[in-house]
Amino acid sequence: MRKGDTVLTYKNDRVFRSLKNMVELINRFNETGVHFKSLSEPEFDTTSANGKFLLQIFATVAEFERNLISERTKVGFNNARKRNELLGRPTDSKQETIEKYHFAKHLYENQKPFN
Image 1 (cartoon, helix red, strand yellow):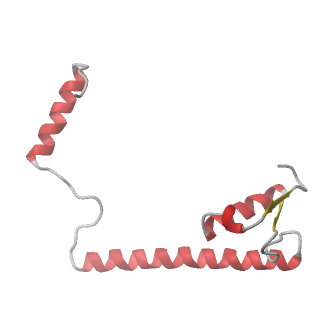
Image 2 (cartoon, one colour):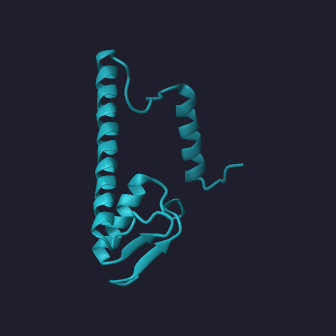
Image 3 (cartoon, one colour):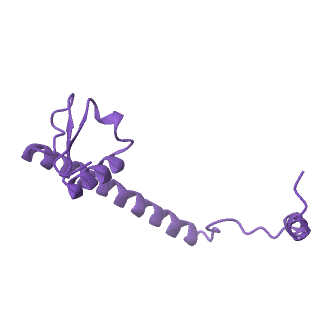
């Protein structure tokens, strides 16, 4: 695509997987001077002031959603810490895991395939 080109779609759901994806792709179009229009959703038109305004609103909503997810995640981690719960991946020091590691290392060092 070149500057001045227009991406034309019948419906947005044929192009975008999510609101975040839509915002990222529209921003990429804008950076390269490419316009975007939807035939069945005329409010999605980056060639008009109204269309640009609406897309900015969607970008703000997407950022708001990301911030909410981040806040909820932090609250969840903090609550788990207060309850002394283990966070992150489980540390597995079971004997069986250690034996599997040594077996895999032995096979690797001796170039024997797994069967």
